[in-house]
Image 1 (cartoon, rainbow, N blue to C red):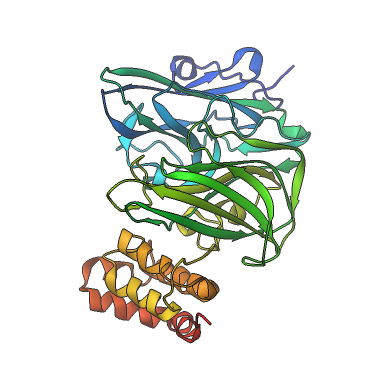
Image 2 (tube, one colour):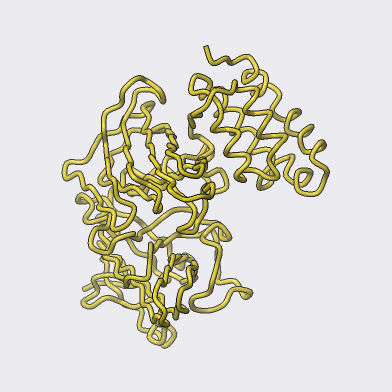
Length: 406
């Protein structure tokens, strides 16, 4: 006999739980369904968010199923750092700018093709844990290209396992390349690499690009730019992207790296950068793994979403020295990671990638979030922002100045 969710049963029978439509118990105590219902206007592209409170007992799961209709480009389910549902956020689905407005702590599930999703059965004893009463965030990207209103229903089903049988916690890698510069009528690439911070086993992998993406390759490496890597995953799709599942798992050793590259063809007449819309571009690598390490799944230097991708190494595609590219970024860009900033950084030569990545990392930490230059860079004239950056990142910028393209 099951007691609450201690052995994977969905047993909350309170009036509040019974009346909820955003969280539904699956039949026979198999798990939980997270549900979003929306109405999409004709010819509209937007992102919708919905905050959902997890069951008060918490649960563990080792498999997911995702379902949505053809107007959706992706659906994601995150755990957040919120401790209760905020009063100033609407109930049900609401339009948002993505999940960045909420302090996400990890990706729990989702898909960009309902017929091929990650998390299709973890090894025995391995599961993802959802804390009691956690506040979760559903985020869905809708593209209604029709001339009719669309009624949509999106569901993420998480299949539970007994919590006392879980010996190792799994996680989901969610890596994002912040840098891309696609000039009109031209080809381009973006390359990034993240360090493996502990011995882990990768269970599946998937790419994510937008319409200009024509090729994606992820490779394992002994060092970020250590000659040719060993192919881990490849795809030329940006829609209906297939997940590659590794039945035996792929061992990734602490100290190694995983790189990923997106190749683009911009046939349009306008420059394109990184952004959330289908008219923008993306370059992402996603995959389930265990045992869990927050620093690894965010490619973060401190394990937090606030420092997402701060441990990554990027690679320029041009001829500028590190000093020229960094100076261009600090002096020319209106804000961190805007199109001008990205173009400056990607104009660096590949030989200075290590020094440039370190300087960029320091710059972004200093000028964003609660960094020491954040308020100055938002409210003060550009010279004051630049002065603060040069003060806070002096050692990193000195190393960058000394790096050459020879």
